Length: 383
Image (tube, rainbow, N blue to C red; front, top):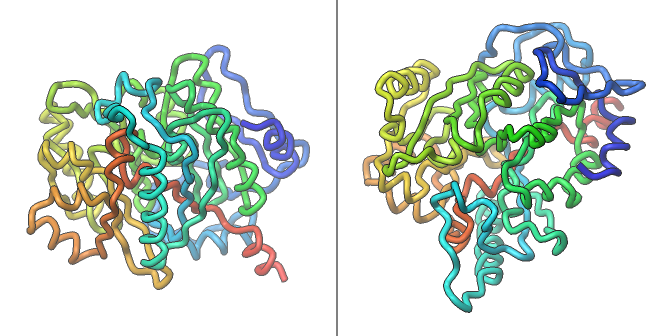
Protein backbone atom coordinates (compact mmCIF):
# COMPACT_ATOMS: atom_id res chain seq x y z
CA UNK A 1 0.00 0.00 0.00
CA UNK A 2 1.24 3.51 -0.71
CA UNK A 3 2.57 5.44 2.26
CA UNK A 4 0.22 8.35 1.56
CA UNK A 5 -2.82 6.09 1.45
CA UNK A 6 -1.80 4.28 4.63
CA UNK A 7 -1.40 7.54 6.55
CA UNK A 8 -4.58 9.11 5.18
CA UNK A 9 -6.50 5.91 5.80
CA UNK A 10 -5.77 6.15 9.49
CA UNK A 11 -7.52 9.50 9.52
CA UNK A 12 -10.51 8.53 7.37
CA UNK A 13 -11.06 4.78 7.71
CA UNK A 14 -11.96 2.60 10.66
CA UNK A 15 -9.37 -0.20 10.51
CA UNK A 16 -10.82 -3.53 11.57
CA UNK A 17 -9.13 -6.32 13.50
CA UNK A 18 -9.90 -10.00 12.91
CA UNK A 19 -12.57 -11.92 14.78
CA UNK A 20 -10.71 -15.22 14.50
CA UNK A 21 -7.19 -16.16 15.66
CA UNK A 22 -4.45 -14.71 13.47
CA UNK A 23 -1.33 -16.53 12.39
CA UNK A 24 1.94 -16.27 14.27
CA UNK A 25 3.69 -13.09 13.26
CA UNK A 26 0.64 -11.61 11.51
CA UNK A 27 0.28 -7.94 12.51
CA UNK A 28 -2.99 -6.83 14.03
CA UNK A 29 -4.58 -3.99 12.09
CA UNK A 30 -4.50 -0.84 14.21
CA UNK A 31 -7.69 0.89 15.21
CA UNK A 32 -8.01 4.49 14.09
CA UNK A 33 -7.84 7.07 16.87
CA UNK A 34 -11.22 8.35 15.70
CA UNK A 35 -12.74 5.45 13.77
CA UNK A 36 -15.75 5.96 11.56
CA UNK A 37 -18.91 4.17 12.58
CA UNK A 38 -19.40 1.00 10.63
CA UNK A 39 -22.38 -1.05 9.60
CA UNK A 40 -23.31 -3.19 12.60
CA UNK A 41 -23.18 -6.58 10.89
CA UNK A 42 -19.38 -6.48 11.13
CA UNK A 43 -19.60 -6.58 14.90
CA UNK A 44 -22.31 -9.17 15.40
CA UNK A 45 -22.85 -12.52 13.61
CA UNK A 46 -25.76 -12.42 11.19
CA UNK A 47 -27.63 -15.15 9.29
CA UNK A 48 -26.90 -15.42 5.54
CA UNK A 49 -28.38 -12.53 3.61
CA UNK A 50 -31.29 -12.83 1.24
CA UNK A 51 -31.64 -10.51 -1.77
CA UNK A 52 -31.45 -6.93 -0.53
CA UNK A 53 -30.52 -5.90 2.98
CA UNK A 54 -33.03 -6.73 5.72
CA UNK A 55 -34.47 -3.95 7.80
CA UNK A 56 -32.30 -3.71 10.89
CA UNK A 57 -30.69 -1.18 13.18
CA UNK A 58 -27.36 0.16 12.00
CA UNK A 59 -24.64 2.35 13.44
CA UNK A 60 -24.68 4.54 10.35
CA UNK A 61 -28.08 5.33 8.93
CA UNK A 62 -26.93 7.36 5.89
CA UNK A 63 -24.63 4.53 4.81
CA UNK A 64 -27.30 1.88 5.30
CA UNK A 65 -29.66 3.88 3.10
CA UNK A 66 -27.03 3.98 0.38
CA UNK A 67 -26.43 0.24 0.72
CA UNK A 68 -30.09 -0.58 0.19
CA UNK A 69 -30.04 1.24 -3.16
CA UNK A 70 -27.16 -0.84 -4.56
CA UNK A 71 -27.94 -4.07 -6.45
CA UNK A 72 -26.43 -6.88 -4.45
CA UNK A 73 -25.14 -9.16 -7.19
CA UNK A 74 -24.05 -6.79 -9.93
CA UNK A 75 -22.73 -3.28 -10.32
CA UNK A 76 -23.04 -0.65 -13.01
CA UNK A 77 -19.52 0.66 -12.33
CA UNK A 78 -16.22 -1.05 -13.11
CA UNK A 79 -12.61 0.07 -12.90
CA UNK A 80 -10.18 -0.83 -15.69
CA UNK A 81 -6.43 -0.21 -15.89
CA UNK A 82 -5.18 1.08 -19.26
CA UNK A 83 -1.87 -0.65 -19.96
CA UNK A 84 1.45 1.06 -20.64
CA UNK A 85 3.89 -1.89 -20.69
CA UNK A 86 1.70 -4.97 -21.10
CA UNK A 87 3.77 -8.10 -21.71
CA UNK A 88 4.17 -11.78 -20.90
CA UNK A 89 4.64 -12.09 -17.14
CA UNK A 90 7.33 -14.64 -16.35
CA UNK A 91 6.59 -14.18 -12.64
CA UNK A 92 3.15 -15.80 -12.96
CA UNK A 93 3.67 -18.21 -15.85
CA UNK A 94 4.65 -21.18 -13.68
CA UNK A 95 1.07 -21.92 -12.63
CA UNK A 96 -1.01 -19.98 -15.17
CA UNK A 97 -1.26 -22.52 -17.96
CA UNK A 98 -3.30 -20.12 -20.11
CA UNK A 99 -0.36 -17.77 -20.75
CA UNK A 100 1.49 -17.97 -24.07
CA UNK A 101 4.74 -16.08 -24.88
CA UNK A 102 4.56 -13.43 -27.56
CA UNK A 103 5.87 -14.05 -31.05
CA UNK A 104 9.20 -12.53 -31.98
CA UNK A 105 8.90 -8.81 -32.77
CA UNK A 106 5.18 -8.82 -31.91
CA UNK A 107 3.99 -5.41 -30.72
CA UNK A 108 2.06 -6.73 -27.75
CA UNK A 109 1.59 -3.35 -26.08
CA UNK A 110 0.02 -1.76 -29.16
CA UNK A 111 -2.36 -4.68 -29.69
CA UNK A 112 -3.32 -4.77 -26.03
CA UNK A 113 -4.00 -1.05 -26.04
CA UNK A 114 -6.27 -1.33 -29.07
CA UNK A 115 -8.16 -4.24 -27.50
CA UNK A 116 -8.45 -2.41 -24.20
CA UNK A 117 -9.88 0.75 -25.77
CA UNK A 118 -12.33 -1.31 -27.81
CA UNK A 119 -13.45 -3.11 -24.65
CA UNK A 120 -14.04 0.17 -22.82
CA UNK A 121 -16.02 1.56 -25.75
CA UNK A 122 -18.18 -1.58 -25.92
CA UNK A 123 -19.03 -1.39 -22.22
CA UNK A 124 -19.87 2.29 -22.37
CA UNK A 125 -21.93 1.71 -25.49
CA UNK A 126 -24.06 -0.71 -23.47
CA UNK A 127 -24.62 1.76 -20.63
CA UNK A 128 -21.97 0.51 -18.21
CA UNK A 129 -19.95 3.13 -16.30
CA UNK A 130 -16.24 2.51 -16.86
CA UNK A 131 -13.58 4.23 -14.76
CA UNK A 132 -10.23 4.14 -16.56
CA UNK A 133 -7.02 4.49 -14.57
CA UNK A 134 -3.86 4.93 -16.67
CA UNK A 135 -1.09 2.62 -15.54
CA UNK A 136 2.28 4.17 -14.71
CA UNK A 137 5.34 2.94 -16.61
CA UNK A 138 7.37 2.35 -13.46
CA UNK A 139 7.58 0.05 -11.72
CA UNK A 140 6.95 -2.44 -14.50
CA UNK A 141 3.80 -4.43 -13.68
CA UNK A 142 2.86 -6.42 -16.79
CA UNK A 143 -0.43 -7.69 -15.30
CA UNK A 144 -1.84 -4.35 -14.12
CA UNK A 145 -4.56 -4.85 -16.71
CA UNK A 146 -6.09 -7.48 -14.37
CA UNK A 147 -6.95 -5.33 -11.29
CA UNK A 148 -9.61 -7.57 -9.74
CA UNK A 149 -6.99 -9.83 -8.17
CA UNK A 150 -5.51 -7.50 -5.57
CA UNK A 151 -8.57 -5.63 -4.25
CA UNK A 152 -12.32 -5.91 -3.93
CA UNK A 153 -15.00 -3.51 -2.73
CA UNK A 154 -18.36 -4.01 -1.06
CA UNK A 155 -21.55 -1.93 -0.74
CA UNK A 156 -21.12 -1.33 3.01
CA UNK A 157 -17.90 0.57 2.35
CA UNK A 158 -15.45 -2.29 2.92
CA UNK A 159 -12.27 -2.40 0.83
CA UNK A 160 -10.23 -5.63 0.93
CA UNK A 161 -6.58 -5.93 -0.14
CA UNK A 162 -5.36 -9.42 -0.99
CA UNK A 163 -2.04 -11.31 -0.75
CA UNK A 164 -0.59 -11.91 -4.22
CA UNK A 165 1.72 -14.73 -5.21
CA UNK A 166 3.52 -12.93 -8.04
CA UNK A 167 6.13 -10.51 -6.70
CA UNK A 168 5.67 -7.97 -9.46
CA UNK A 169 1.89 -8.13 -8.97
CA UNK A 170 2.31 -6.86 -5.41
CA UNK A 171 3.67 -3.63 -6.84
CA UNK A 172 0.27 -2.87 -8.37
CA UNK A 173 -0.92 -1.71 -4.94
CA UNK A 174 1.52 1.23 -5.09
CA UNK A 175 0.42 2.79 -8.38
CA UNK A 176 -2.21 5.28 -7.29
CA UNK A 177 -5.45 3.28 -7.52
CA UNK A 178 -5.97 3.18 -3.76
CA UNK A 179 -5.47 6.92 -3.33
CA UNK A 180 -7.95 7.59 -6.11
CA UNK A 181 -10.54 5.22 -4.63
CA UNK A 182 -10.33 6.91 -1.24
CA UNK A 183 -10.77 10.33 -2.81
CA UNK A 184 -13.78 9.36 -4.94
CA UNK A 185 -15.55 6.77 -2.80
CA UNK A 186 -16.47 6.27 0.81
CA UNK A 187 -14.14 3.59 2.22
CA UNK A 188 -15.69 2.79 5.57
CA UNK A 189 -13.22 0.13 6.63
CA UNK A 190 -10.13 -1.57 5.25
CA UNK A 191 -9.28 -5.26 5.54
CA UNK A 192 -5.63 -5.55 4.51
CA UNK A 193 -4.44 -9.16 4.11
CA UNK A 194 -1.33 -8.30 2.10
CA UNK A 195 0.99 -9.17 5.00
CA UNK A 196 0.07 -12.83 4.50
CA UNK A 197 2.48 -12.74 1.56
CA UNK A 198 5.31 -12.94 4.10
CA UNK A 199 4.03 -16.37 5.11
CA UNK A 200 3.55 -17.55 1.51
CA UNK A 201 -0.22 -17.52 2.02
CA UNK A 202 -2.14 -16.20 -0.98
CA UNK A 203 -5.67 -15.28 -2.04
CA UNK A 204 -5.99 -13.35 -5.27
CA UNK A 205 -9.25 -11.49 -4.87
CA UNK A 206 -12.18 -12.19 -7.13
CA UNK A 207 -9.91 -14.33 -9.23
CA UNK A 208 -9.55 -16.80 -6.38
CA UNK A 209 -13.14 -16.27 -5.23
CA UNK A 210 -16.37 -16.14 -7.22
CA UNK A 211 -18.89 -14.29 -5.07
CA UNK A 212 -22.62 -14.72 -5.00
CA UNK A 213 -23.14 -11.38 -3.31
CA UNK A 214 -26.90 -11.79 -3.24
CA UNK A 215 -26.89 -15.09 -1.36
CA UNK A 216 -23.61 -14.43 0.52
CA UNK A 217 -21.80 -17.48 -0.89
CA UNK A 218 -18.09 -17.59 -1.76
CA UNK A 219 -17.12 -20.24 -4.31
CA UNK A 220 -13.41 -21.08 -4.36
CA UNK A 221 -11.18 -23.70 -5.94
CA UNK A 222 -8.01 -24.39 -3.98
CA UNK A 223 -4.72 -23.73 -5.78
CA UNK A 224 -1.26 -22.32 -5.17
CA UNK A 225 -2.91 -18.89 -5.34
CA UNK A 226 -5.98 -19.73 -3.24
CA UNK A 227 -5.15 -20.84 0.31
CA UNK A 228 -7.60 -22.05 2.94
CA UNK A 229 -6.21 -19.83 5.73
CA UNK A 230 -6.73 -16.62 3.78
CA UNK A 231 -10.16 -17.77 2.60
CA UNK A 232 -11.23 -18.33 6.19
CA UNK A 233 -10.16 -14.77 7.05
CA UNK A 234 -12.23 -13.22 4.27
CA UNK A 235 -15.44 -15.23 4.58
CA UNK A 236 -15.43 -14.79 8.36
CA UNK A 237 -15.04 -11.04 8.08
CA UNK A 238 -17.53 -10.54 5.25
CA UNK A 239 -20.08 -13.01 6.61
CA UNK A 240 -20.08 -15.36 3.62
CA UNK A 241 -20.71 -19.10 3.42
CA UNK A 242 -17.73 -20.91 1.87
CA UNK A 243 -18.25 -23.48 -0.87
CA UNK A 244 -14.71 -24.75 -1.60
CA UNK A 245 -13.50 -27.54 -3.86
CA UNK A 246 -10.58 -28.73 -5.98
CA UNK A 247 -10.69 -27.90 -9.69
CA UNK A 248 -8.20 -29.32 -12.19
CA UNK A 249 -7.48 -28.79 -15.87
CA UNK A 250 -7.59 -31.76 -18.22
CA UNK A 251 -3.93 -32.52 -17.42
CA UNK A 252 -4.79 -32.81 -13.72
CA UNK A 253 -3.14 -29.53 -12.66
CA UNK A 254 -5.00 -27.22 -10.28
CA UNK A 255 -6.70 -24.33 -12.09
CA UNK A 256 -4.95 -21.20 -10.89
CA UNK A 257 -8.06 -19.03 -10.44
CA UNK A 258 -11.64 -20.05 -9.71
CA UNK A 259 -13.03 -17.39 -12.04
CA UNK A 260 -11.45 -19.19 -14.98
CA UNK A 261 -13.74 -22.20 -14.50
CA UNK A 262 -16.95 -20.54 -13.26
CA UNK A 263 -18.98 -17.36 -12.97
CA UNK A 264 -22.13 -16.55 -11.03
CA UNK A 265 -24.73 -13.99 -12.05
CA UNK A 266 -28.18 -13.05 -10.84
CA UNK A 267 -29.98 -16.00 -12.45
CA UNK A 268 -27.26 -17.90 -14.30
CA UNK A 269 -24.19 -19.83 -13.18
CA UNK A 270 -21.67 -20.93 -15.77
CA UNK A 271 -19.21 -23.60 -14.66
CA UNK A 272 -16.92 -26.33 -15.96
CA UNK A 273 -18.21 -28.95 -13.54
CA UNK A 274 -16.02 -31.58 -15.20
CA UNK A 275 -12.97 -29.81 -13.76
CA UNK A 276 -14.16 -30.70 -10.24
CA UNK A 277 -12.89 -34.26 -10.46
CA UNK A 278 -14.06 -35.43 -7.03
CA UNK A 279 -17.66 -36.66 -7.58
CA UNK A 280 -18.80 -35.56 -4.13
CA UNK A 281 -17.41 -32.06 -4.53
CA UNK A 282 -18.84 -31.80 -8.04
CA UNK A 283 -22.30 -32.82 -6.86
CA UNK A 284 -22.12 -30.45 -3.89
CA UNK A 285 -21.09 -27.53 -6.12
CA UNK A 286 -23.91 -28.07 -8.58
CA UNK A 287 -26.45 -28.52 -5.79
CA UNK A 288 -25.33 -25.34 -4.04
CA UNK A 289 -25.64 -23.37 -7.26
CA UNK A 290 -29.08 -24.75 -8.02
CA UNK A 291 -30.30 -24.37 -4.43
CA UNK A 292 -29.33 -20.71 -4.60
CA UNK A 293 -31.68 -20.23 -7.54
CA UNK A 294 -29.21 -20.33 -10.41
CA UNK A 295 -29.72 -22.07 -13.72
CA UNK A 296 -26.45 -23.86 -14.44
CA UNK A 297 -24.71 -23.93 -17.83
CA UNK A 298 -22.13 -26.71 -17.78
CA UNK A 299 -18.98 -26.09 -19.84
CA UNK A 300 -16.79 -28.72 -21.46
CA UNK A 301 -12.98 -28.74 -21.45
CA UNK A 302 -12.65 -26.89 -24.76
CA UNK A 303 -14.96 -24.15 -23.54
CA UNK A 304 -13.00 -23.85 -20.30
CA UNK A 305 -9.80 -23.43 -22.31
CA UNK A 306 -11.56 -20.73 -24.37
CA UNK A 307 -12.22 -18.71 -21.19
CA UNK A 308 -15.98 -19.36 -21.23
CA UNK A 309 -15.88 -19.57 -17.45
CA UNK A 310 -14.38 -16.08 -17.22
CA UNK A 311 -17.54 -14.00 -17.65
CA UNK A 312 -18.97 -11.22 -15.49
CA UNK A 313 -22.52 -9.96 -15.23
CA UNK A 314 -22.91 -6.22 -14.78
CA UNK A 315 -25.92 -3.99 -15.42
CA UNK A 316 -26.50 -0.92 -17.54
CA UNK A 317 -27.87 2.45 -16.48
CA UNK A 318 -31.43 1.11 -16.80
CA UNK A 319 -30.67 -1.79 -14.47
CA UNK A 320 -30.72 -4.38 -17.27
CA UNK A 321 -28.23 -7.28 -17.01
CA UNK A 322 -25.26 -7.43 -19.38
CA UNK A 323 -23.03 -10.52 -19.46
CA UNK A 324 -19.49 -9.65 -20.54
CA UNK A 325 -17.13 -12.21 -22.06
CA UNK A 326 -14.43 -12.45 -24.72
CA UNK A 327 -15.44 -13.24 -28.28
CA UNK A 328 -13.36 -16.42 -27.99
CA UNK A 329 -15.52 -17.50 -25.05
CA UNK A 330 -18.78 -16.61 -26.81
CA UNK A 331 -17.83 -18.44 -29.99
CA UNK A 332 -16.97 -21.57 -28.00
CA UNK A 333 -20.54 -21.92 -26.72
CA UNK A 334 -23.10 -23.99 -28.59
CA UNK A 335 -26.31 -22.42 -29.87
CA UNK A 336 -28.41 -23.74 -26.97
CA UNK A 337 -26.04 -22.22 -24.42
CA UNK A 338 -26.04 -18.91 -26.27
CA UNK A 339 -29.84 -18.84 -26.41
CA UNK A 340 -30.07 -19.52 -22.68
CA UNK A 341 -27.72 -16.63 -21.94
CA UNK A 342 -29.77 -14.37 -24.24
CA UNK A 343 -32.91 -15.35 -22.31
CA UNK A 344 -31.51 -13.92 -19.08
CA UNK A 345 -29.04 -11.20 -20.15
CA UNK A 346 -27.63 -9.21 -23.03
CA UNK A 347 -24.37 -10.93 -24.04
CA UNK A 348 -21.45 -8.61 -24.74
CA UNK A 349 -18.52 -10.39 -26.47
CA UNK A 350 -15.33 -8.32 -26.87
CA UNK A 351 -12.14 -8.87 -28.83
CA UNK A 352 -9.25 -9.31 -26.41
CA UNK A 353 -7.37 -12.06 -28.28
CA UNK A 354 -3.88 -10.73 -27.53
CA UNK A 355 -4.59 -9.98 -23.88
CA UNK A 356 -5.98 -13.48 -23.36
CA UNK A 357 -3.09 -15.21 -25.08
CA UNK A 358 -0.21 -13.26 -23.55
CA UNK A 359 -1.72 -12.45 -20.16
CA UNK A 360 -3.57 -15.69 -19.49
CA UNK A 361 -6.64 -13.80 -18.28
CA UNK A 362 -9.85 -12.77 -19.97
CA UNK A 363 -12.83 -10.41 -19.85
CA UNK A 364 -13.75 -10.86 -16.20
CA UNK A 365 -10.15 -10.49 -15.02
CA UNK A 366 -9.97 -7.02 -16.55
CA UNK A 367 -12.92 -5.68 -14.55
CA UNK A 368 -12.69 -4.59 -10.92
CA UNK A 369 -16.24 -4.11 -9.68
CA UNK A 370 -16.87 -0.90 -7.75
CA UNK A 371 -19.55 -1.32 -5.07
CA UNK A 372 -18.41 1.48 -2.75
CA UNK A 373 -20.80 4.40 -2.13
CA UNK A 374 -19.64 7.60 -3.80
CA UNK A 375 -18.47 10.49 -1.66
CA UNK A 376 -20.72 12.95 -3.50
CA UNK A 377 -23.75 10.65 -3.10
CA UNK A 378 -23.20 10.71 0.66
CA UNK A 379 -22.92 14.50 0.70
CA UNK A 380 -26.12 14.88 -1.33
CA UNK A 381 -27.92 12.56 1.09
CA UNK A 382 -26.82 14.63 4.08
CA UNK A 383 -28.05 17.96 2.67
